[in-house]
Amino acid sequence: MNRRNMHLRTDGFIRNIHTRNPFDVIRADVVLARIEKEAGRCCGMHFELYQARVLGDALDYLEALPLKDRPILMGAAAKRGYILTLSEEEHALKAKKVLMSELAANE
Image 1 (cartoon, rainbow, N blue to C red):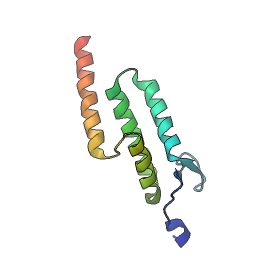
Image 2 (cartoon, rainbow, N blue to C red):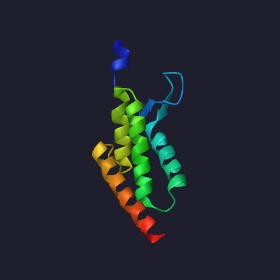
Image 3 (tube, one colour):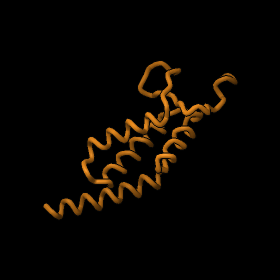
């Protein structure tokens, strides 16, 4: 790795993991907005489902990013009110499980 690639970006852009070109970038807040939009389509009116989906998808994207881009996505998520940690995802999944059991009991 040359010295040029070791510097952290400060402009809010991260690598676009959905393209073949390793130099394609996308704004971190746009990535999160797309994740939120997709979660909104799939989860209906249940916040627990929405939050579990957003955190799961954001953590998947975070895992696929190079190390130098991860703090940018984490910062953008924090501005939107998400803490991208496994413990937060676990908490959201527990809430989702409780909701699903309540919905199943109501049927």
